[in-house]
Amino acid sequence: MNPETLARLKRASTATLTTQMFKRGFRNVFIQGVRPLGRYGENMVGPAMTLRYIPAREDLDVLEGFANPEHPQRKAIETAPAGCVLVMDCRGETRVASGGQILMTRLWKRGAAGMVSDGGLRDAAAIAELPMPVFCAGPSAPLNLVMHHAVAIDEPIACGGVAVYPGDILVGDTDGVVVLPAHLADQIAADAAAQEHMEMFLAERIAGGAPLPGTYPPNEATKALYVEWCRERGLTP
Image (cartoon, rainbow, N blue to C red; front, side):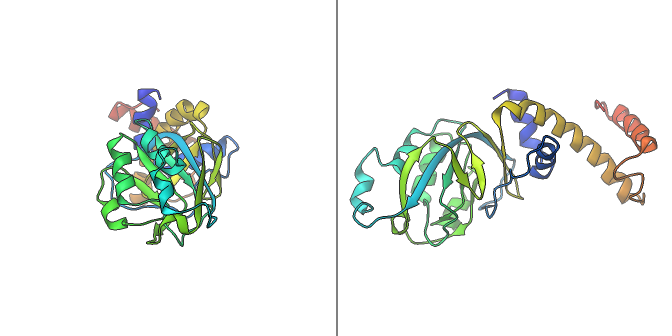
C-alpha cells in the first residue's frame, strides 16, 4: 500500500470513508455486527486475507484435525503476511468462537495489522489486551468445531453482510470496519483527508453557534471562510 495512503487511512474515520464510498456508488461497505474488543491507539488498516467457514459436520470436525498444518484455520494464522488483516466469514454465527487467545497472539506475532470476524471469540478479555486490533461480534466460549468447518483461504467471502475480496483494504475504528476496493484506496484516502478538514471546520462553526442552514452543508460564504481557515493552518482546502 502507498505509505501516504496508509497514513491517511489510519487517521480517517469509518464515517468519513463510508461517505466517500457512497459518493462513488457503494452502499454496502460497513461490516455489520462487529466491534473492537480493545481500545486501540489508531485505526486498523491493511489488505484482507480471507478465511471461510461452513457449518460443521461431526465426522470431520474433531480436535485431532488441528494437528494437521494444512487445516485452513491454522494455516491461515501461520501464513498470514505481515500487515494483512485476517477476515473470517463465520456466517454471523455467534454461538461459538472463531478463534482464541493463542491464535490471536500468533497472528499478532506474525505482524498482522488486525483480525475481523463476524462470529465470536473466546478468551475475549485476554485478546482485548493485545496491541493488534481485533474486531468481532462478541465473546463466545465454545470452540469453533462445534459449528464451524474451515474450508478456504483467500477466496471472496461475506463478513457481516459485506463482500470481502482478498486484497481489499479494511479500515477499523471505534465504530467498526469498512471495506474499500484496493484500486480506489489512494483516491478515497486523499478525499477523506480533505473531507475531515472541512468537517473539523464545520464542527467548530456549529460549536460556536452557527445554524445548520448555510453551514452544514456549507454555502458559498461558508466555503470562503473555510479557505481562509485552511490558509491560517497551512492546509490545502
